[in-house]
Image (cartoon, rainbow, N blue to C red; front, side, top):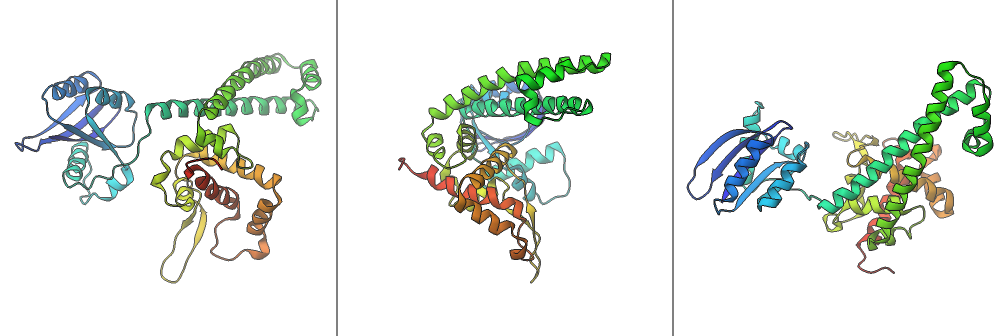
Length: 334
């Protein structure tokens, strides 16, 4: 077997490899993409099992596809854990590759779960829609500012037929008029694009049994359900909902020492998109169900606030993130 530790960079990769049968060791820097492709293609022709380990960071999807197509076993590791296992203070690309190789040889490599290509492509759909919605929000806020400067305050009604007619009727200076017109054109282009992407999300959610099961939860729509399924992935990785909350950065930051225990704001680690969607879904749930609202009010009640407790603003998504895990782990809908 040939084991390779890779320190991956966008322009090149530093490798440290060893052949376990003969003990042959080599270090090399491979430029992207030609040298790297030639190197791995030559290895695939040797007839031995090849295992490559690298940190789960960087923009290396092309390299992943190359290795998968050549039948090379690729392990992705937790970059933070790999960094914590380092003993020496010296840090170079060569030392990083050697360190990863040592972890592979000692069977101490912190391998993590990696989603398949279909999962990653659906994530691109969610991110693309999210960015388009953010762009539309920025455009709408600018149009609201234009209206407010002209004395028109009608909030959401500004983007209905009568509100838009009022906005277009204002006599503005040349550049302000051009700005208003181009912002309206952008808005007209973004709305059908977002509608099309939303329909694609709904179709993808309907094809996923786990997403349909999650949509039975109050406040959860196709977007949140599909994002939860794609980002959480294999639920067997988690033993309870609290681990999912920690995975998504919804647990409080802790700085404790001795008898002093201090909990601060949420850690905000993990996927920011799913965390945002869970907060939105939690707010909808609080508004729609009295029993969930009573839990939220209990968390946000200043009279019940105890020193050292987590911030109350994280309570809503934190409560919400526990329950979908039980629904998702069911093999059949109930």
